[in-house]
Length: 259
Image 1 (cartoon, rainbow, N blue to C red):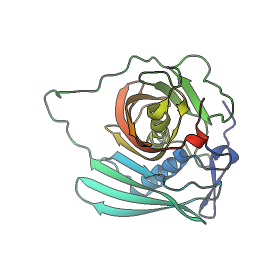
Image 2: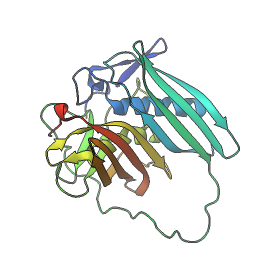
Image 3: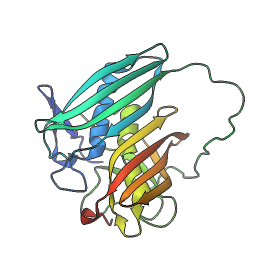
Image 4: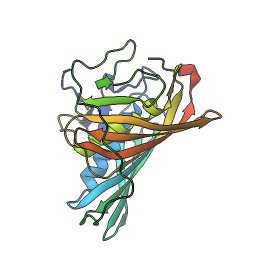
């Protein structure tokens, strides 16, 4: 395990990134997964309520940002008896770099009967042995590949966070899911020549929150034409599938990631 140095330190209302908050595309660019995590953290802190479940989180990543202090503002859009909607805006002193929208739904008694279609649990056991290592950018989280990178067929990985997101705060299940969801793009959009797409957003839908530290991601679809892609994954924990994630992505062949 690495040191417990968090990705961000909170100082005077801003979140100051550590060097390992960078992403794989550029040595001075904030990783998009962390913006989704920060949005989830702020939305959960300010708008969560017992009995209301975070059923959807959409994160728009429309502007790259260097490693600058980040601020997250949230707005309550709708607060009804069974639904709550809240937005988040993520910004630096250079302007807005992303936004997010969350839908919280009131939990209640599960309807009777059987569903006509149910996503099955995958057959992947919890990982054994050391996480993968790679040349170049090293993921600041534990990663176990169950399939070869870029091989034909559905890709599968297990992920585990190894750093706190902010200071020494525990990573909550919702934030953990938001961080893992960004891996939907590389897993669903990788090709035999490597990863030639960079995602512009992701939408995570959750029937329940994940249990434990391990999150499995399984690619279940990819379509692309004219340099525009859409991909989808199923997210699992050791108890079974708990949600889906869909992404849109744009071709980025100059910075193609091959490993």
